[in-house]
Image 1 (cartoon, rainbow, N blue to C red):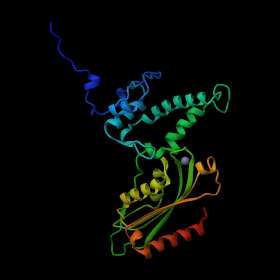
Image 2: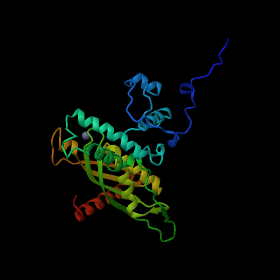
Image 3: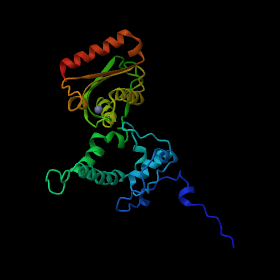
Image 4: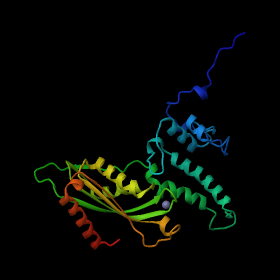
Length: 278
Ligand SMILES: [Zn+2]
């Protein structure tokens, strides 16, 4: 007697099939089959059962070669309603962290809802820029005879978080550009900068990210981004330096190559700082 060969649907399933959120059924309790090793990670699915939406999404991103570092936006992989599920799953994980820290979250009234507060804060506030799509920045034409040809400098207040210690990074970004064929609303510069900042970042990377996104939104090739920020990881721990300030600069096009443009940008920043010292 011969048995017809049936390929294992899990091993041989079509991995490119799109994830359908309504087909996702959480098991209701955590299932840790085995710890993921580096070899597992290279093999793909790490040996976890996909009991969690978070695991499912992680494996999907690995399979598709999508980078999901702390500073990366992964909104393309999320469907409507996923964030709420992910918050539930992160709440469970933060509960475990509090338990491991030996904090009595059953009796301490201040610690009762902390796990959920932390989960919501990460997804909706301090790391919202990872999960939310880019703010839409409608552009207006700037191509008539009386088009604006000067330099535009926008000061954007920033709140970010260092990906090493998850400590706050607080500061301002100055975004300068010579307008190209179109302009975006003034508040959009800050919205884009804040969307880039609300992730786990390095200040050096953040300056690059803002410059890249502003270039995408405006088409401007001549632009500069200057960030001044204090870092909780230097103030609250480690060297405990209370007045340390980190400055990063990214210059492109005329801002980089033309000394006059560069000087005008930094003169503008000085004037802004006189108007609103940070
Ligand atoms: Zn840090």
